[in-house]
Image 1 (cartoon, rainbow, N blue to C red):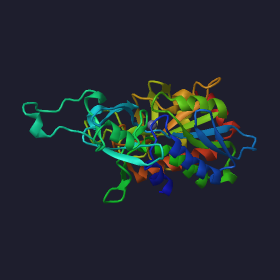
Image 2: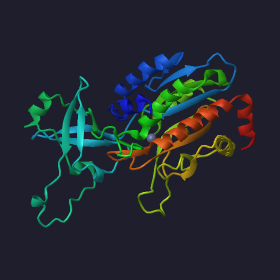
Image 3: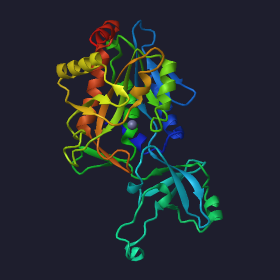
Length: 354
Ligand SMILES: [Zn+2]
C-alpha cells in the first residue's frame, strides 16, 4: 500500500477542522493532477483528462473523522468534550486523546475512568453521554490548561495510529473512515492509465461527511459530475452476531445495494457487478443503516448517477478500526476497472438499464 494511507490516518481532522488533511491532499493533488479545485467549504479535488470530450466522473473519500471538540475547561483543569460525528460515549472511557492546539501540536490526555477502588457498590461505571466524563491533560487548574494552549472549540482526536497485525495483512488505526477513501483518491490518480480514459476525472475528498454529508453537497454542485463514486468504509459484523447484516473482513469490496438515503440505481448495480465479474474482483453485498456522500451527490442539480464502493472495516466510529489489505486491492482494482469502461455510451447504457 502506498504511503498516503499511513500518512493520512495519522493526521488529525474532525469535521470542520480538516486543515491538516487538506494540506496533505493539496500537496499530492498538485503533483498527481492537472488542476486542483477547492470549494468554499474546503473539499478538494484533482482533475485529469479535463480536455477530453467525455462524461465527468467524480471519485471521493471524506477527510473528516469522528472525534470531539473542547466544550469547556473545568476549574480543576480537566476538559469537557462535545462529540463530533456518530460516536458512542461507551467506547471513549480510558482512551488516550490529543487536543490539537493553535500551532498544530498535540496536548495529550486520557479520558478519566474511575478505578474499581472508588466504585464501591457500583458494579459498572454508567456512561450515557460525553458529559459523564472528562479529558485529563494533567493540567493543575483552569489557568494551567490555558497556558498549555487549550481553547474552546479545538479538535480532540483519538491516539490510535497506524499499526499492522502480526501477519501483515490487516491494519489497525483511527480514522480509516474515511482517510482510506481520501488516500484511494490519490492512489487512483497515480495508478490510472490516462491513455485508457474516455472520461474527465476528478478525484479527491470532501469535508464534513460525518455531520450530514455537507461537503459533498457543495463539491458536487461545483464539479457537476455525470457519475459519482463514493469510496468509504462500511462496518463488518463478522466478529459479532452473524445474524447482524454487515460485511466480512477480507471478502472483497462492498456493493452497497441499499441504505436509507440512497437506493442503488439498478443500472449502476449491473455495471458494478459486470465489471467485477469480468475482472475477477471479489465483492460482497451490503445493506446499510447509514449514508455516504453518494446520498448527497445523487440529489445535486438535476440528479447524478451514484454508487458507493465500500471498504469493509471492523469497529468504525469507535476509537480504532481494522481493514484488510486484500480488500484494499479489491476496491482499487474495481475503481480502475470501472474507469476504463466509462464513456458517453456506458452512461447511456447504465441509464437504460434502470
Ligand atoms: Zn465514512
